[in-house]
Amino acid sequence: MKIRDYEWWIVGTLGLIAFFLAIIGFNVLFTEAGIERNFLDLAFQSMKIFGMEFVDEFQSPLPWQLEIARWLAPGVVLFAAAKAIMYFIRREYKSFRLKSYKNHIIITSLNDKSRYLIKDLIKNGEKVIVLAGIENPHKLDLVEKEGAVIVEGDITSNKFLKNIAGHKAKYFVFLEEEDETNISNAISVYKYLIEFGKDKKQTIFTHVADDIKLNELMELKFFEEFMEANEINANCEIRIFSMNERSSRILFKDYSPDIFNPIVKETPQIRIAIFGSGNLAQSMVIRFARLGYYANFKKLRITLFHDGNTIVKKLLQNFSGITELIDFEDYDEPLELFDIEKFNALNKEHHFNAVYLLCENDSLSSNILKKLTKNDSAENLDIVLTLMNPDGIISKWYTAKSIYNINLYKFNLIERSFTKEALISEKIDELAKIIHQDYLKSLGDKRNISEKPSHNDWEFLPIDFKIQNREQADHIYIKVRAAGCEVVGLSDSRPEFKFEETPDIVESLAIIEHDRWWAHMVLSGWKYGKVRDDNKKIHPYLIPYEVLTNKIKQYDRDTVINMPKLLEKIGQKIVKRVD
Image (cartoon, rainbow, N blue to C red):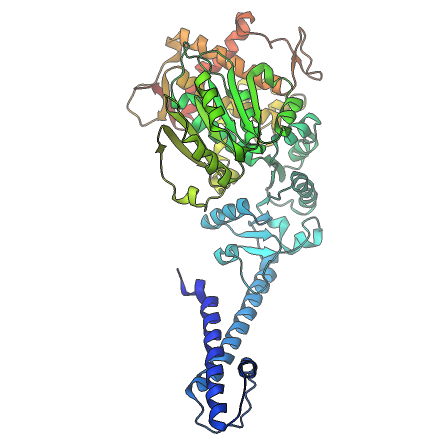
C-alpha cells in the first residue's frame, strides 16, 4: 500500500495530536501564570489554534507541547485545504479537457458491474468517462485514481454530450439498474450520434437484465426499427446485451451436466436443481429449456427452489411452451429457510446430476451451500456456486474444490461478464459469428437483405437471429461430448474425428440438433402448421425428427458434419475423448 492511501488517517492523527498537545500546553501555561481554567476552556483555546488564533500575550519560552501544537495545527489545516483544492482543480481540469477527447468510452452509472469494467478498460489502455454522481467533491473516487473521469450531467442533453465529446467516443455503455432507463437513454444518444457523429463508427452497448423483458420487447418488434436504422446509419449501432444471458451461456458452456459425467443413450433422465429467485435463475431455466438436449434423448428435469412465485408465473406466461420442453417442478419457500431434509428426500428419489446456486446475494448462496454440505447422498453432488462480488471473501479467498461429498465449482458473474474481451470484443460470440458468416456464404446469389432479415451481416442482424446462431454455437460442445469426443487446439497431435465415417453418430446428433432447433422455435412463439406462415409463426417442421422427410433430416445432418469446419476457424478441432 502507498502512503497516499493512508494520508487522511495520518492527517487526522496529527490533528488529534496537535489538539491534545495544545490542551496540555495551555494547562501548563495557565497554571504557571496562576490562571484557573477548566477543561472546556482549555479545549476551546486549543480549537482556536487550528484557525491560527493564538493571542501573543505570553512570553517565551512557551511549554514545548504548546509550541509544537501551534505550528502543527495550522499545518494540518493548510495541508487539508491544499489537498481539497488540488482535488477540485484536478477534477475540474479533467472535465475541462473532455471536449478534446476522442476514441474514448462513456459509461453510465457507477456500480459493481461498471467498476469492474472500468478497471479492465483502463488496464487495456482505454480512456473512460463515467456519468455518475460525485459522492465526495473533496475526494477522488477509486476509478478516478485509476484514470477514469467522473462527470455529472444529463446524458439526454445534446449540450452535455458535446461537453463530453460524445460524437467522438468509440463506445457508450449503458449500465443503469433499470432496463427501461438504459433503453430510453440509448435511443436518445443514438439520435444525437446520427446527427453529430457521422465521421466515425460508434457502438452503443445497452444492458437489459431481464430476459423476459427482452423477449417481450422482441415480440413487440421494438428493436426492429433500430436494427433497420443501424443498417441505414452505418456509422452508429445499438447493441442490446444482458449480463444474465451472457452469464447463463458461459455457465452452461462450462458447467453443463454432461461435463461432470458423460451422457449416453442409456443414461436415465437428467435432473438438475436451481436455487434462486432473480433474473439469473430465470435466465438459466430458459437456457436449459433451449439447449438441454443430450445423447439420452430424454426431456431434462429441472427442480427450482425459489422465494416467491413471481419467477415461475413470468416464465410460464412469457414462454408458454416451456413445459413441452422440460419437466419442470418448483418449490416456493424462503431460501433462508431452505430445508436440507426435503432436498435429501428429493435426491434419494432421483439423484440431482448438478446443482446451481444462482442467488443474487452471496451470503444467501454460502448459507445454502453450508446446508447442502449436510446432504446424505451416496453419490457426489456437483455444485456450481455463482457469486456477484468479485472482492467478497468467498469469491476472493475461498479455494476449496470439494467439501465432504460435494464437488464445488465457483463462478463470478461480474468477473466473467464485464471485461473488455467479454463486452466490447464479444469473444463469446466468435463462433456464432462464424456460423452466420458460413450461412451467408452458402446463400451465394440468393442473398436478399431487403426481404430476409436473416440475410443481414452480423452487426445488423435482428436479435432473434443472433440468438439462433449463439444457440447453435453453444450446442456444438454438447454434440461433441455426446459423440464421445472433445474439442482441443489445432496443435493437439491426436487425429481429427471424422463424422462422415460414423453415420450412426451423425444420425444421433442430428436428432438432438433438431430438438434444439424445435425448442428455440417453441420458446419464440412458433407453432406447428402444415403451411409455413412467418407472420403467424407457423412452421411445418415442428414435429419429431423421425417424421421428417429425408431431405429435411439432411439439414440437421449437415449441421453436424459441418462442425469441424466451423471450429477450425477459431483454432479448434474435434478428437476422440480419452477417458
